[in-house]
Length: 396
Ligand SMILES: Cc1ncc(COP(=O)(O)O)c(C=O)c1O
Image 1 (cartoon, helix red, strand yellow):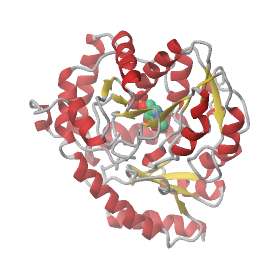
Image 2: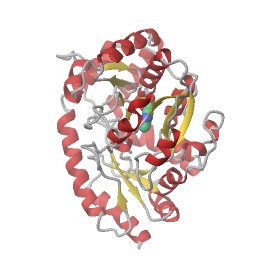
Image 3: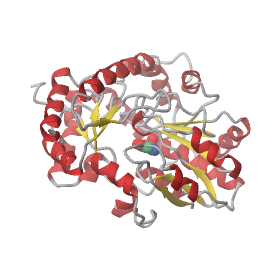
Image 4: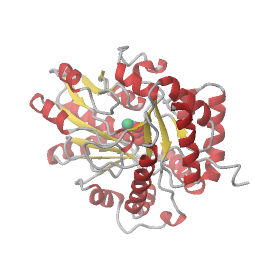
């Protein structure tokens, strides 16, 4: 029964326990600040909302600047947040086979219209923020580190401000939630003021998210995930609805509301288990990267710029055809092999009204050749070996 009905989560989220719903010793903002070594972390209802707060705040002080530069391969929500603020999206390509910005292209995009640039720590990997900061520091451009997928990584110290996501399946979760933080005291005061204005209390949202978080507490394990995640995902794949299958089909309306104390309390309690959980993930990732390194031609994206976290492994295959062949064999399986964002941003039909249609060859190649393997502790050695065997047979 359990064997047939299981589904590994696509990312290694920290499971919740019912004890997390009891009163916590310290507020979430306090434990998060301490752990991340960032002063006075602000709690938001999502990383997208955090980005909206930051951009709205910056735009208020520099209203003449209208452009935000983002990687051409990132979460569609980032584009939607910029659009929500009435700002213009400027895409920058990545370096080949990398999550880092193409620095030459980025340099050519710097001008007086640019409000902010968003280097992104994709998949828990640490991107090069220092170089970006040096590049823009004489231009009054704010560097926003997008660490939505990198909760617990050593980030947020070179950029001007950093965002994290506490969405379902992220390292730590409130079902939906986010954090923002900055070392700059003056900017922090302004951001806190903006957050107060932009995040009203909305009972309807808090009730919905609390029920969802209860569901997550009950069902975030392979047996529960089969029913609430696996079945729907496989149906979408059968219908060739790839964007639905990975959940890239976001709404243009961005919920903006406060997070209730009880949900914050749950995350604050779960936080106590996060450091040891992240440590286990790191050990597992290291061991599995070594195993993958035996497959000639497969590249695992690793850290060159600091200590990251390991929600999943990002693999680049030599060709898009080989990546697709692997997905044909493994995507519909419950093992935990999937794709991150289906496309580079210009390739999403539903984003066409807001994203410039520009060729971004490296981002497009990254989207076409990349797959992810969950780093969930529920993915057993035997299952991982099964995945490696499929990849090996196709790449050989
Ligand atoms: C890179 C990146 N940025 C921003 C976001 C938005 O985060 P949230 O879902 O908390 O709004 C995501 C969501 O997955 C993301 O992956």
